[in-house]
Image (cartoon, rainbow, N blue to C red):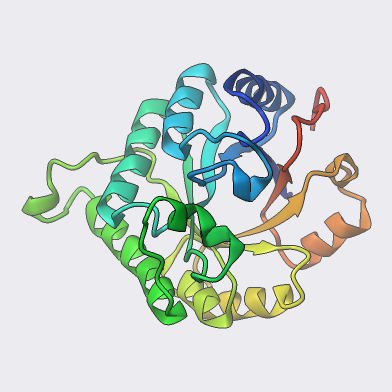
Length: 256
């Protein structure tokens, strides 16, 4: 059965509204509550933003059972050691499964890069290098989040349970990285090459456990397992559906 997660935007919702949706999602039985990773509200059409791991820390205290995650953390917004330490810290604070969704970041000419340009942040122009950094995050997490880790990593936070690493993909190459090395893949359901990305990841993953997630704008109709889109997701072995609301907070059902 596909687990349904939810996400709302702090670009257009203040902390109290985000918290209230997280609590409603928890009460209704949603699987996880995900946060955006942006520096400013403008890319999401808002006039403010809450830094993602600061928001997750507050949500870890405000909620009790719902899983938490990033969908997705830009691997260029932080030094990679800072990123995996932040993820491990949220897992430790919440005592729950944490889903570290990661993405390779935008090209310098993309509108998604404007917030980095505004603060003088380096934006990597080479797609291969952007994707290689995703691999670096996966490798460092694997080295840091194990009890038999090297001495130089021995005092870094050791999360329990170990966060899952879900790669948001935008190419066949990155899909293969996800399949080989990560715990799962995230595809935007409405992307034309969605099935190609899933196929590439599935081939690379082989028979090992692998999480397939789909990202879709919030639509209450998709809470129905018999909806044609949900049926298509089941046919593609989608394990988790992330419903993302980019506007004001949705009215969630009492049960999912």
